[in-house]
Amino acid sequence: EPEFRIVDTATVTPDPDTQKVVDELSKKLSAELDVQIGTTVGALSSKRAVVRGEESAMGDLIADAIKASTGADVAITNGGGIRGDKEYPAGTVLTRKDVFTELPFGNKTVVEEISGADLLAGLENGFSQVEQGAGRFPQVSGIVVTADLTKAPGARVQTVTVNGKPLDPAATYKLATNDYMIGGGDGYTAFSKGKVLVDPSAAHLMASDVIDYIAAKKTIDAKVDGRITLKK
View 1 (cartoon, helix red, strand yellow):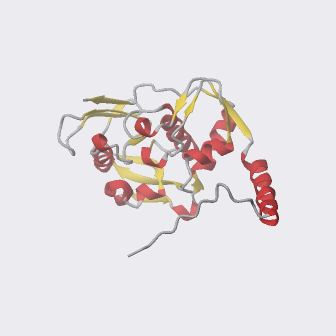
View 2 (cartoon, helix red, strand yellow):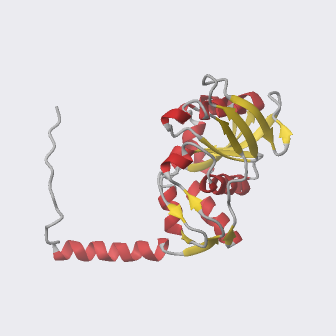
């Protein structure tokens, strides 16, 4: 059985040599991370309850960024991978540090060809544990979906359109997602069935894709626009 000894360092005087090293490293990190990349027009929320329970402007921004960076038809990322738990008021100047705070796990943007049936199965999984605030909740781009949470898990998705057209179970779509999900993480086993076009070894960091997307646009007007409608 493990035993834990709590060491309270709040009142400890820092060792001067160690503190000097910490300060130097913090300065180097600040030079790389405290770099302004763009401004958000509207408010953004990455609060835990939002990204795991409803469409969020932050989720839309991240999904749009990985879709744009890959040229995929659609993009889906799990709300549980968005970790800042913050509110960004309208007019906030975003930094690289903000993006890495939101996407801290080093996930990669991967791309695969997937059937419409497996895409639908993935969405069903994404809405299967909304009541528990599960991290599998999908944040999407290129998709408009309605889900009825009064239905049993696995039978909740009512309608799906892909870039304005009804999802075709027999069609093939190019999906951008993250390496955790394509490996079946968060219950997305359907995403492990596709033909991988860009695997983790050839992929960019998701955070880098989002940073590049914001920096290129300079002004970000991400907002909740009806991609996900939930009946409760």
